[in-house]
Length: 279
Image (tube, rainbow, N blue to C red; front, side, top):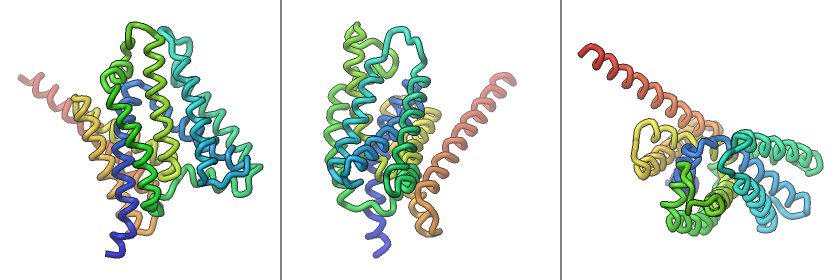
């Protein structure tokens, strides 16, 4: 019973975050901007480091506010750079953002006491030490974001699949801005809880599995949430019982499950092709 009481906040946090990240993960996968999560997470970490350098405590409201403003500003620039004919692939722009954010973070780490430890913590995270206060804080941020995305669901889905909203790039950029700002806020809130690697895996891994197995858009989101939650809970149990790091355990489980699903789908496809050829 004491173990369940201790693990209850991490379990609830993983289920909530798996749901939010599954929704955005399916959008990110369909947009083909796979590594934007790592870039945004690194930008968010850089924003927090700037807040620390300004004299704010790491987990204070002011440090988080600096991180939000910095992340939203960068994502706003990224959304406004969208054009009918892209001169540069979006992945190239994302890669440049990531390298700049990482380079600046490494430079700031030299000026902040314990800066290198902070960078390590943002990468690996530590889900087991999540508190009910953190869970409530996530809910207070995620619920309004979920409502906003549901209000604009049809248009955001169209833009994600490459359509022009309202027959103009200005309108499309506006909806892109809504998507990227809400996505950025979710990432800024998720990284301190789970770390960059785990957030990335929960964003892309479950969405990839559901994309392999399911065709319906809504079914993909639901199955991504289920897969992400199961993988997270299994990883928490393994890390707690074997006394190993929780983030890498969850990342490894979901990553392996993604490849198993891919190979299973490939095997089934080849089997069907053989049956058709034989007939």
